Length: 532
Image (tube, rainbow, N blue to C red):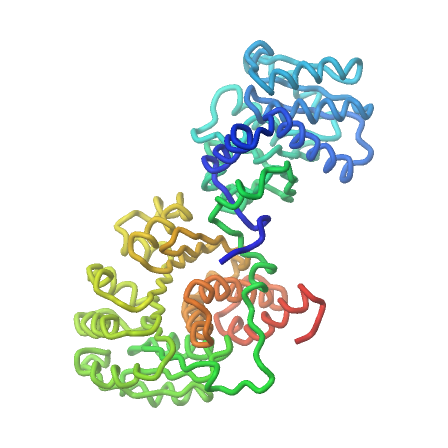
């Protein structure tokens, strides 16, 4: 899939390689890139802070500090007094950073000063300046930071945050808040709390991945003229309303239910009939023409009471009222004319279920969405992945991903994007790693970071709704990857609409189901200001 360059995300290593190619292969000097970056920050400041008189900038010794010196020069040239605190000595600067420090000193005259800081005692003098300033600019670390901040830099970050909190001075970070890992959003010991972050070329994964995402504030992207061919090497995309809309397909005026596909869902066990019901309803709300919910036979009367539009199909069951070997023959018959299969919501966990699950996967000829107890069954028989012929969509939360991969949830949460991409390729599946900023990864190495959703969705049944939405989209002809990306966005946005209407705490899965069609309508109205 090809999407807008502005939706592409990069990690620190990819950004370094892009800079290298731009400088070495396209002969665009690093000095020009730094000038463009600093000028972009200045233009943002000029537009958003028109009455500045006094600015404090904290600069590191690397290129991020060099960007800060460019900003300082532009501000001083506009008659704004600039105090630059350099964490080190001027003689320690190299290359373009040193050049721009010298330019600042040449231009600043009476409108600027450079304070070289070599220890924390000298840094304490910044307190008086920041308390009287109109704006603090953080240019300490850029995207290259990959170890915990300590010493002088850590104290500078503390001063910035304390001054902002105590005196209300706004803070702008250059490229990324110092202390945030650009590749995974981890806070490396401590990090700046920015009101706004101005980044360059492409946004970074760390801007949108928690906990670092909470430090970014408003994010502004500045074009520094990286060649289009260089930026196209990025294979991670941010899923926002525009990208989601680009995946939507219009339904023909003469469309009928047969053209919208038939979804089959294997779900339910004693005490867990609601999971299947929610998945089935969600598939219909997502646009599937027909949905059949296959359940253990003794549970069918319950589901017939719960559901009206979703068809139910009683399947022979075990003595424990679950799917098992006795269910397989009927299940295979049901699979014959379906466009997509979903399996897992509430099916329970025992040896019989594992045997049933194995046979369904081995017989499947259409895409299969696996969630909940289906993922738990898969975790006990991972060798199945080498035998399955059908395309698979796995939708684990971090706990389920831990059982599938053998990694701890802490490891998974610290490198969500990297791990999702790695295991999607390893297992040959579409992997939907759920959570704040859900990640969707393909076997080909593409990855997507979703923007929709909110903390109010931390309640039971949300995963069942997502399963239904993705399955319902596949049944309409969306590819497994398209259905996963669009489905995750719709799921989160339906939650956002519920949050706006009902409040943050107490949202339930049913609130999302009823808002799935409204979410599609919202997308159309936002992009084109039209009603469908």
